[in-house]
Length: 378
Length: 231
Image 1 (tube, chains in turn blue, brown):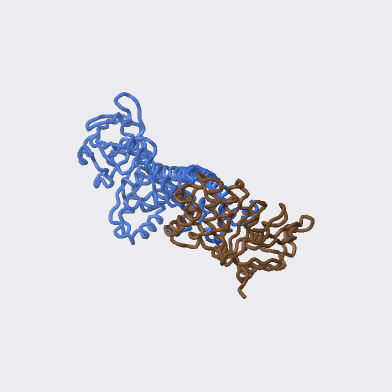
Image 2 (cartoon, chains in turn yellow, red):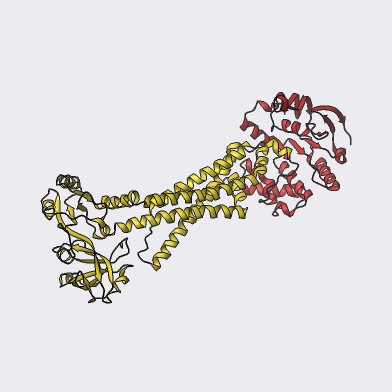
């Protein structure tokens, strides 16, 4: 480290009270922002849980559909039409809908029912108990063992329930990558059983799951589906469409934006003010350095180094604290809806850069304006 | 003939404009030679500190020139002037202006550090100078643990460490008791003043006049008297 930067470092860290206050401010701001955005990204991820868990490459749906949870039924011919399109390797139906389950104790519980293609069971979950072929057994259902599992009275193989006056039997317990957003359990069964058990409108086909022959066929399939009056999206596009819905049409995005701005203001206020106080307290010394013969650009470097050093340590601590807290929360609650993403990291980093720039600017302005002559005058 | 250490001609300096205009220096001309310890004395507001600032390249005069070792310092740009101060001039400030968060050696080493000299080497050099000013074994202490006289010695070590040709001392005894002030100036006179060094001291303290080679008296921005070799 260059001598004058080491000097800047010592001036900063040896003032333990100020340095701690600066770190706390930065850490808190980064933590707050990371946590809020991580939670939101986690929520968005959970909102697309069915899309992620089923894992199909392409999804065909009614153009009015915004998320997987508000599916609009399509006529059965759509499935046949898609199967006959050029570039389609295979296509299967999917049912996704809500229902009420009557539990043995007489209480009712909302559930999400996913109906898989009877022939292929495409999109089936990973079973931890039971055998997948038992889904074809009479009244067979697979229960997802996520954080909502206990709401079905923690069923085991053979447990029974009622679904719209139909008997249901648990034939398998499954684990999924991502659990749902709405805090309700998920049941898997066959497509035919789902549309048979659950009261439905005229059209029952929620989605057609498509596997293109090659990635180049995606555009062609989209065009053909659009010509049919429906919408085909890749898995990623469907996830983004779901995210856009929650960001722009539910107020969630606005709330996150407000929280992010608040955390930014808090961070900027604490850090900026503390750093400014630090500069003010050392103003005479900076003036003395100037009198002794420090060039202005070296003073600027010193201040930038001090602000940058504090900010990046604060950034690391904030990210670490947020990650630690999320990890601890996930130890207690496996489906805890928060995830640290590159987007959060970049956003927080950008915020830290702005805080550093503003804090430095204020300090630099003050230091550059001081006249060494004032040091002589005391 | 060799250049004088400091030569100033026709120095004028004022602050403010119009009715608020205050004239601090009026047509000052002076010379200081190497090996001299020149005192500038006078009542408060007479322009002593302003003159010191102008001579040391800190405050630009409105008119006049200052040559240090033959260099017209006010023709230099800001960076050149900063380099000039760093390499040619040592400062001892009235309030010492030591960094409380640095230890004594680090404080004394600042000019070398600013010259981009290696940190450890600078600290070793500073320890030597602290020994010279009588602060052996105090290198690791923070300035707050030192007495006023000791802090002034650290400031002197800091000013001396870069072996400047010109040493500028602003009210060096103002914060010290009489005996300590005397001891400090005696030390400077006996150990710091050399044939190739010029020391300019601004002071109110008549008890230290005995160490001056020459005393310039200022009043209302003018040099009103010169007293040669008092001691």
